[in-house]
Length: 257
Image (tube, rainbow, N blue to C red; front, side):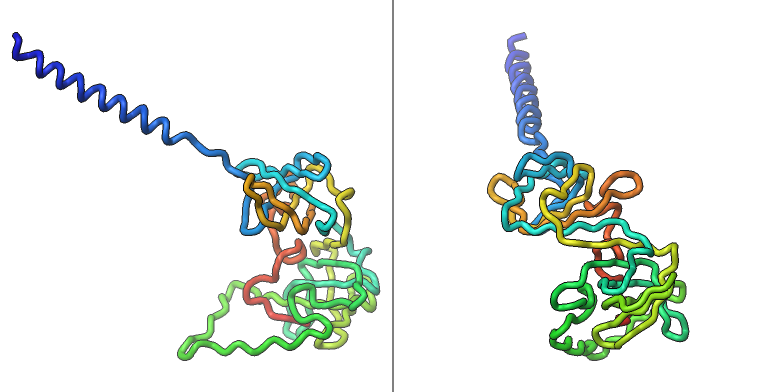
């Protein structure tokens, strides 16, 4: 009987060691809170609270604090209509061209004319800009084939000089005047510089700026867009960013201006 005591004692030691390991593992795997929908040098999400110079954005991963100041710039994108396409307005129209080269817009982004005129809305060269150098393909590289089911996209950017119904004439930077068609089904938005007073809870916000040690984004610029149809901000920008929503032109888009 005495021989069993060392065996029992050794078994107890193994049990205690196993329990201690489990407790230690549980203590070291506690979750850390996520901080909003972050990206490099900023964050994005839906604006849920405004506390003076502090904003609270919420995203799929949690909340993020954004600090604004006297030097923070604000741009707001709003839903517009065909009637807002008027002479003197800057326009970036994205769509498909037919066999004659005429563009029918699927999305349109409007903005006020600046003192320097209308550039190419970030899609091309603005007034006084140096031409972009031609990019040579890599030696031996084959050109990418265009999928047969994909319609090549193009854009026209410049100043609206005439508008009658769905027919719009645009003075482009590089190709002179160009007529386009803006159907009533096109998605039309307008962007303008605003102030912090134009912030509203429920809107989608993209804040650009560095994070401090506490994780607060010190915003140098704020971009505001309306929430999507469901009232949410899928990527911080009303269900996504694309042409006409403040986004970039599609990859491989052909420049029409």
